[in-house]
Image (cartoon, rainbow, N blue to C red):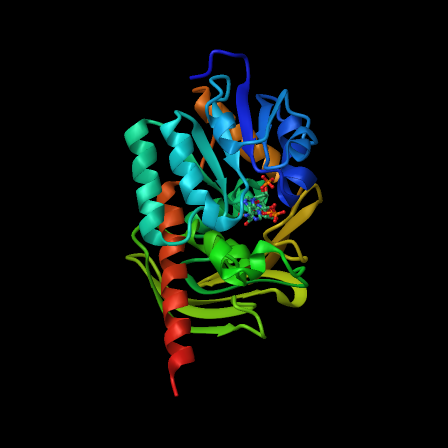
Length: 332
Ligand SMILES: NC(=O)c1ccc[n+]([C@@H]2O[C@H](COP(=O)([O-])OP(=O)(O)OC[C@H]3O[C@@H](n4cnc5c(N)ncnc54)[C@H](OP(=O)(O)O)[C@@H]3O)[C@@H](O)[C@H]2O)c1
């Protein structure tokens, strides 16, 4: 538990997300301080306005004043810096996708448990009050048992040179945006749910990563049985869709920010027993809620965090999707 008044955070990496969004969210958090930031170029770390800037991630994790680190590096660098940070005694919040496969996800959580530290995947949409309401509605059987799911997250235009187009750096649409619709569903169904990917199609469109990934899967547990589909793309008109049908109704997240509602009013529409109603949610910054909840948890003041099994479950679906897409591509 930290000895200072608020939790001291260290940012590992000062890329687009940290610079454009998350540093500001942390500065706005009531129980957290952006104590340190590290980037290969110290000036970029300094630009996040921390108390201390470093030109090396290693120096940051060795700073005894840092309680928790937030990792926003390219995806392949997440696992090594999670392990090093845990070994240095820091709690870890790591950007999505936390690591590249289910085996490494299990390894990372086991390491955190061994060290008695928190490790959390920063799927920011999960902290949005609309997402939490969705969970309340589904668990109270407001639409009966889930039977069909459609989740899409597409946009157009990744700049050449960005790590998202580099397979060695964990690029590709499934890792980048496909995990949002997967996390949204997995959070709604029980840990015991079994997912089987039945179809996966990967379009590379002249690149070395999946520019578009389409997947279909079945899900079942003792309470429900159904099927789902996701589409993730770097090469389609920007849009996000969430539709969950159940035996007695349907929930949709209207608008184009099903997974990225940020500082804007959002809505949820539910049809249940033939009646349709819309709930409205005030504008919030879910990144700020994420930092505040994790800081509360570190300080022993409660704080809601997603369960590690959700990340393992999503990583297993991702593994199956890549495997099936590759097998389909090899068919004559
Ligand atoms: N939750 C969200 O809304 C959201 C949105 C966007 C991205 N993300 C996630 O955040 C992470 C970073 O995304 P981003 O958009 O911020 O990426 P970005 O702008 O390309 O920044 C990449 C980061 O990786 C670091 N890096 C370390 N070694 C590198 C190398 N050899 N080549 C290139 N970069 C290197 C850079 O560190 P230095 O600062 O030290 O140079 C920089 O901090 C990814 O995991 C992504 O999935 C999440």
